[in-house]
Length: 357
Image 1 (cartoon, one colour):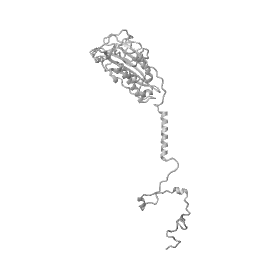
Image 2 (cartoon, one colour):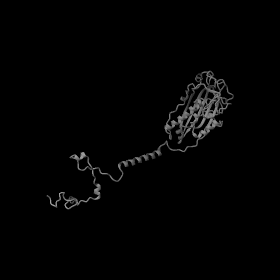
Image 3 (cartoon, one colour):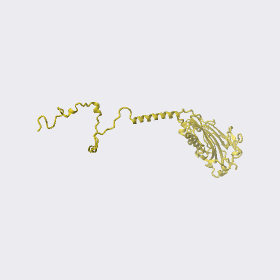
C-alpha cells in the first residue's frame, strides 16, 4: 500500500514534482501560440503505422497581392490601353459633326419626237428594234461595281452606300405602284430626314423652280394618259462611289430606263410605244445615313421623252403615245442613250433614239 505521501492517483496537478515542472522553463509566448496549427487526421490516417504524427500545411502568404489579383490588374490595364489605342488610331469610327444637308437641285428636260411616235402591238418588237435591245430587265440593269475601302470608309460602308443608291433607283424608277399608281412612300422612306420637308412640299405643291418637281425625285406617268404595256422595263447604266471628304461618301448614278406604254384603259390590242428616261443622280451619305440606310440627294438631272415641249412635266410625265406628234421642239439630236448632258429646256429626240418599226 502506498503511504499518505503517495496518493494512488499520483502527484496532484500543479503540485511539486508534477509533470508541469518538466516544462516550467518553456515560455509559450503569443507568436508561438499563433504559429501552432492543429491538424485533425482521418481515421484511416490515425490507424496507419506510417502516418506522420503531424502533417505540414503550406504556409499562408501574408501581405502583398495574390497571383490572381495581379493577373486581373494586368488584364484591366491591357484592355484599357487597347481601348485608348483604338480610339486614337481606328480610321472608321471618328465622330464627325453632321453637316447641314443641302436641298436637292433638279433639272427635268422634256424631249419631243421627230414626227409620229412609232408603235407596235407587241412591245417585244419595239424593244428588239430600239437601242434598248441589249439592255437588261429591271434591277438586273443596275449592277453594283467592284468596291474597295476609301481612306475614311470601310469596304462594307462603301457597299452599303451603293446598295442604298441602287434601292432608291429601283423604287423610284421600277416600282409599278410608283410609276402609274401615284405612290410615294416606297421612295420617301429612303430620303434623309433633313430633306423630307423638301420632298413633301414637292408633292404637296409641285413647282418648276428646280427644287420642288416630283419628277425630279422619281419617275411617274400621268395615270389618265398612259399605263405600262410591259412590266419588263429595260435598264442600262452605271454606279460609281467616291469619298468626298472624311465624313461623306458620294455615289453617282447614270441610267437609262425604257418603258413600253399604251393609252390608259385601251386594252392589250392597243399599240404600244417606247418611253425613255435618262436619270443622272448624285447621292451623298454621312455615317448616320449609312447606319439608317437613307440617302441625301444632291443633284437630279432627267431627260424624258417623247413628250411635248408645250406640256408640263413638273408633276407627271405626259408621254406622247403611238401615232402622236409633238407641237414644237428644241434643238435637234438630243439622244438620251448617249453620254453627255443637254443644256436646253426642251430638246428633240434624235432619230437614233427611236425604234425602227
